[in-house]
Amino acid sequence: MCQVDTASRLVEIEAIAGVEGVDVVQMEPLDLSAGMGYLWDPRNRKVRDATKEAERKVLEMRKKLGASDGGGTAERGAYLGGFAMPHDRPENLKMRGYHMVAGAVDVGIFRQAAVEERESGHRGR
Image (cartoon, rainbow, N blue to C red; front, side, top):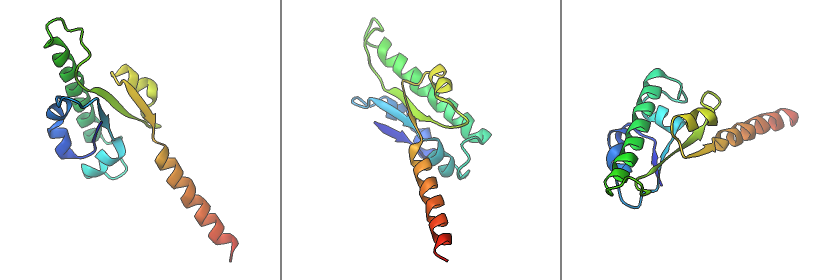
């Protein structure tokens, strides 16, 4: 499983998706937005456009590798994986061809920890 979380990995996404043994190319919307200079802004048009282009390339590579077996029926090439976000629901990802979708739970955990820390600091004063 390979994460795509930087602009340089976007450039190399077809090569990454074509590596034998890579089962999933995992899109990382928050990390990718930061790597493109749009910290915590995966909704930015440039980030969304780059993500959709990367998705298309991964899915095309999977189709190309499947077709290269002669009959196009073999399971070859990397699956597309990603994280559902409030602005990009699991249903949307599935419609775009994602095979594996996870929730961005680490963001919620960090946020909750920060809120609890802030609240506990105010109680002690």
